[in-house]
Length: 89
Image (tube, rainbow, N blue to C red; front, top):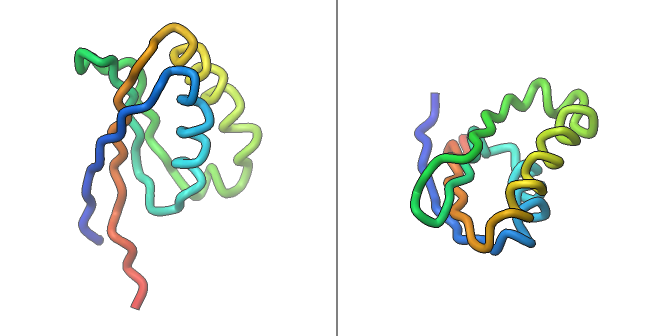
């Protein structure tokens, strides 16, 4: 098993769905947590690549709909992205 690390991004609510969609396209991502500006967890998205790789459109559609709803209601959010280190080599 490889090591993982977490990064935090601040995102405008209007850009949330596009940003999450872009993040979820990265195979090193293991989990995305959306937090309010105050740090309250609003949504956690665990990423299982075996499932997402198989039916990405079907699986991501309801998640992105929920994310868009959250983004529309909030001006600024924090994304906490947990990634595993790439083990190539």
